[in-house]
Image (cartoon, rainbow, N blue to C red; front, side, top):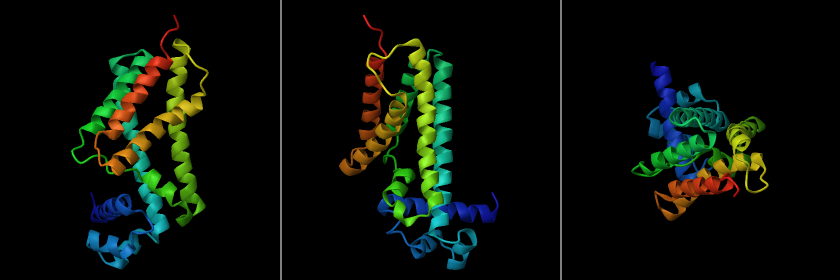
Length: 204
């Protein structure tokens, strides 16, 4: 890693920690500069303003989440080629991963951006929306494969069901932070897993 890349990464790390702790609006450039131990000119060498910083944070977070989902659900598919059981395995691995974080998950940059979207230009707002739509598409595709094998026991919108995965994960993180219960997100994911087992169980 070059010094330039290392400095940029350090800025993003400091900024993300601060933003997840108190939001974008309450996080100042001066605070980021101090935390990253650089000069203001060093910050502006990498980012022209907070909007550009927010875009970079989002892009990094989205890439990390997509990589995580790729790895988890690819591994689940290797363990069981039945689409429903593969999904259930993937969700259980996700729940276990979150439960194993000693200090809990730090939070979601997507949510932090959505809460204060008035601070950002349309490009950042659209990037946030595209990320959520991408996750909808990812999980809808998985549910389509499940529905081809297991007829749902209820009339369900697969787009909404795809969104439900993100809603449960993100909502679980909100509960976790509000209640200071590090297992909240994991428990919500396991409840979603139970719902999916019931939804796609064969009709008698």
